[in-house]
Image 1: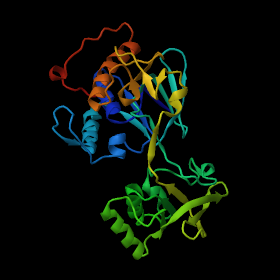
Image 2 (image 1 turned 60 degrees about the horizontal axis):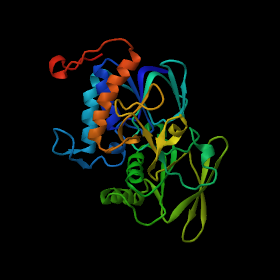
Image 3 (image 1 turned 45 degrees about the vertical axis):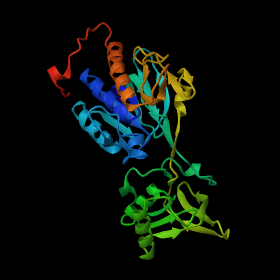
Image 4 (image 1 turned 120 degrees about the vertical axis):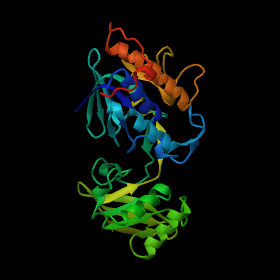
Length: 336
């Protein structure tokens, strides 16, 4: 169980900067994100994309911005739950929220900040018979959090983008057996990665099954077999395996947040622009996931929202305690 002042759902750039703003007020933060690393869309979707509207940086790559934000919040020692999604939220009386993830992690917090960008990124799942019964630790995963988990194991990867190619290359030296299944003869990833995968296949270090789709999965309590169907011949092949990792990308969805009693308009959370609080006491929403008149979905605007939110949360957690704002140029940044 994790206990904190503020639980922040979403570890994208706005969620990370919120840690800094709350840290200046001596508020501890714990961030939860379904993605396996901090950074949100910046790290997962376009780490090499240049960003031009961050103050002080004429241009900065997306991943560089994430790295700088992580460095900026180091003094405040934030904690993280990554690779897990919040499934339930229970409010128990005054200033007590209990959140639980899909893997059973529980977080106790005095206040909740939703900074989930476009929502929770969920994996695009292939239509495969029996797939869901082997999720949650039973052999089917949609992202790779710890490559060492697969050392000496038999693995089947499915997909044709950069993620599938990069992991096939990396795991060739980790897993006992790597099979990459792709529905086409050509890949969508970087040419250099495609060449490396093809060479690994020629050397017998991985196995390629092209023009093929996943058909079904089976096992006794844990995944044991995956059936592959050739698109051109309809021939089916059954492979023994320990793990199946479909890597077909991620799609943003509001997810369980829809059921938390929040006022929602077109998949975004309505907020009060005085402090970006929601209609549920003790819950704030900042960044692309919120909506209000003249809303601009810019990282820059999310940073502004995080600053105002932090002072509102401070007053909520510390009622009656007077706070005198002090500039960092005067006091610096003091760690916990």
